[in-house]
Image (cartoon, rainbow, N blue to C red; front, top):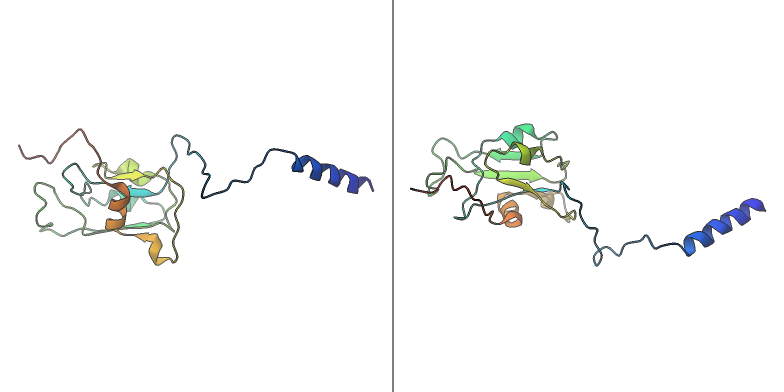
Length: 151
C-alpha cells in the first residue's frame, strides 16, 4: 500500500507542475548562440556562387556527406574572373553530423550553417540537397571584400 500512495503522490505532483510539452509547429525553441545547423551555400553580391570548387569541405567532412564535381580545366563559361565554380555540389543531410568543419575550412566563406533545426523530407532522395537547393537556402551574402570585382 505505501508504494501505491507514493506513486499517487508523484502523479499529483506532476499534474500540478509546470507544463513541459511544446506544441511544435506553433512554438519553437530559441536556438542558442553558436548553434551548428545544416550547411548551405551563398552567392556574392553579383549573384555568383562563392564556392570555387576547392573541395576542402569534401575532404574534411567526417561522414563524407559532401560531394563536389569540379567543372574541369576549362571552367564554366560566363563566370568572369572567378577561378572555377562547382559543376555539382551535393550534401546528404542524412549523413551530415552538423559538425561545422565545412564552414571552418572554406577559404571563400561560401558555406554557412543554418540557425534552424527543422529538416524533413518524404524520402531519402529529398534529403540529398543539390547546389540549387543549397543556394536557395543561403541567398546572397553581403561581403565587404570584393575579390572578383573587375578593376
